[in-house]
Length: 248
Length: 305
Image 1 (spheres, rainbow over the protein chains, first blue to last red):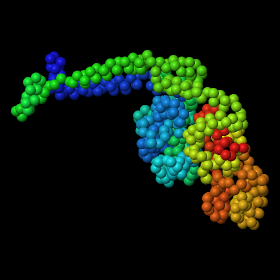
Image 2: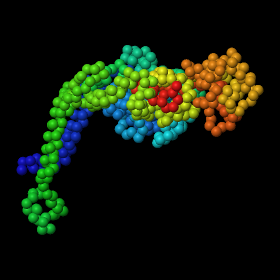
Image 3: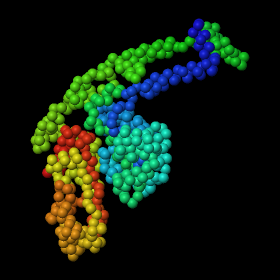
Image 4: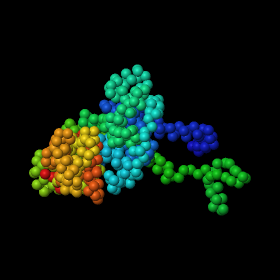
């Protein structure tokens, strides 16, 4: 009888019920999400992970623009079949500078977390222009315009600045640049300096010539530069195969 | 109507009446629902005890379920249950099953593996999977390659050599094709003469007079083609310079074109050079045993030397 009374009391006070409902559903979030911000091991301590260079970051923007993530995940799960096909399982540390991350769970195409350095630039260019010319059974659409569209590099610095605002260590000041030199080394820190973003992008694109066409910088240059760096930042030969077991 | 009246006598209502006679029953929760709810509560408590669960400060409770695995250093370790430890246990199990074969792969020479029927079966099945995952995107499912992009692995024409050792070197360290462009060194007419000479080497229809002039250029020091392709034009495998006399073309072949078209394509290659033909290195991606399996597999595709 007493139970019924209390129940009715909640049900007939809509304001109280709303407050209690919110408390009940926040427990799930608090228990599952909040501790990740306090637990030391959430992001594994590995060497080599760095923010993307301006060219790679522009490639990433194109990756997202074209919706590559709707068919490709970037998250190798710790299962034997995935290790055999794709390589070492993905670490949280490897996507710490991704905003937003591209983990995903929808795999119409293969996982791309470690596609970097697996194929030649030439393969990527031809495969993006006409996937079935390289992989006959592929259902991937053609992306021929990437090769013919010049990359818009005018807003490169602004794009990095936006990422800096959400915590990616691109440097805007000399002090931030010096901090990056300490953290990532001279070569990487130079690439992360926002005032030089456009110059660095042009240099990398001209030097790498990712699309095989030296006449200009295309969107293909950026996208292939991005694909070729995926999963290559951590040198796993430096770590024992159980180095990251204790982090979970 | 009579049933409802009966119920209204035994079950309480909320006490309200809307529109005169609309009342709401206040039935208790069904027993099956209540007991299912209690069961899920008990399940979660059991789950907390067995598996990693509650966060405590900067760590969390590991749970009583343990996983024992052997790591790459050969140490046996026990860790509270998680998917990363479980993966190592799975890999240990597979490694134990495959160990006899991989031990043999490491111990045996390439020739011995190729002659041993049992090992051949192992190479064919495991090599096929490795090839499909790693090599087929470029060299295609059967190793037939793609004209204009990636070399055929099933014929006996090799850019870098078809011996076991050469294939192993290619797989381990990768390759990068390069031919300088000659359009600044030579004049258009000279390039045309060279193209006719190269066509003549493979018996493609050509202009005899131009080919004779091209012959002199090929072996002369202005173009110096012979430095890379050899004075017999049969190529130098140590630098990946192809044999020009066998009528097998990777870059210059255009199927079904007339001889004139082929000479034009050859002219284009001489004029512009090539900076492609990149084969990635697999040493960081595959284990030494896997590379050895692939070496034998590729050798067995048809063209091994």
